[in-house]
Image 1 (tube, rainbow over the protein chains, first blue to last red):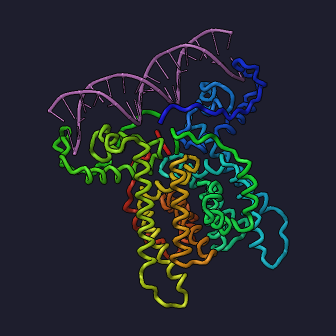
Image 2: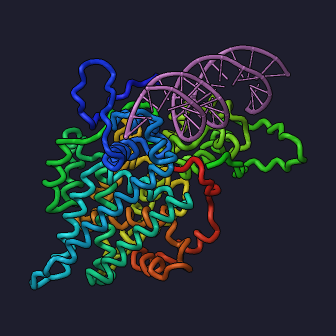
Image 3: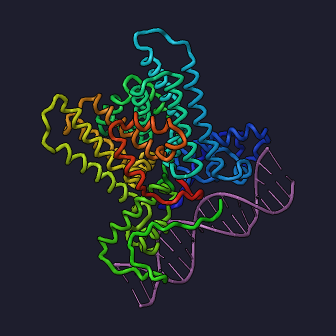
Length: 231
Length: 231
DNA sequence: GTCTATAGACCGATAGAC
DNA sequence: GTCTATCGGTCTATAGAC
């Protein structure tokens, strides 16, 4: 376990001339978005405790104290990242539910399929996927846990009341989603070449949606995987 | 976010007389088990990075350097905790699969139900549940991630080859399991009184197995939920 | 709006005694 | 088998300048 050099997930290009970048002045709101985007990636990869505000700052191309200055505390920053992920998820679902229904033989199944596809699309963003999963395992933190519970229940209610899903459809939909989460989080596609069972399992789990996943996985977003400072 | 006093999840009773406990000398193997049990809880609640070797030590009733001495590094300790959780899971499943099958109308379904019940029983131990989930979100750590992938694939192969499950049964079984994980991790039963949707969702998700879960949840194992140092 | 400098707290690991 | 003491490193957050 030695000290690690940080690979910077730079965002603000600023065409480095070689020296230290004086960072151009941009509106606070815009900078906020940059920081939140960077934080989503860093928190996702290192976990809440494992991530440092300095890693977030480097990924956003600014100084560490500025990150803190803008969000008050690291905890606050994480909460905003989480809220953002939940919001994107809920908005995405709501849009699809509001679409005009096709009157086919299996209306509910069709809607579930479209929602499922949208979900997979969303969690291909590893920052979103892992921020959500981070929140799930923070159940006993009063504030993060409460947000996770509230978010999950909001999805449940949406499926029940707005989508009109019966209980079994809801269970299957949510269960499949949690399986997607896990298989993507552990990076099962990474070992397709080493173990044929990996691809087989992915194929069964994702069914039609596998090609979508594989396309995005290849392009890959992620930090390095330094042995230090995981979670 | 102020400094927090640690609630000690003491294990070695040692009937405190008020002064510092001189900790009785016990065989290394036994002490190992105590530390691993304590570490399972602490890592589960705080995450790999969030947990400190001192918290583990306090929970086990010994000194911090002794924890490090016995496992070399914190990373090593976590790996042993994870290996132990996986081992318990795999052993438990294998025992059930080896049981004589009842020749009913739905042999596969019966076996799946028994495995599911055993799984719920296992993850009622929040240490095991959260250690596993911690491993899932550590996919890009070379060593932890590899263990998570290998463990998941071993379960998959067991269901396919030893239990003889067809693909759809495997998917449903694993998906249900991941949903159990999530709902227990976020502590949904904690808000049964505040929101009827919580109990409804739990009922649909766990079906017959809900009463088992609720019994154990009430008894509750866990650290406190200090606002500091989460995940 | 952004930085440098740094205080203050914490943590993992080592050394060495009993 | 177990502890005390402590080093060296790291991290969040604050102060204050530009």
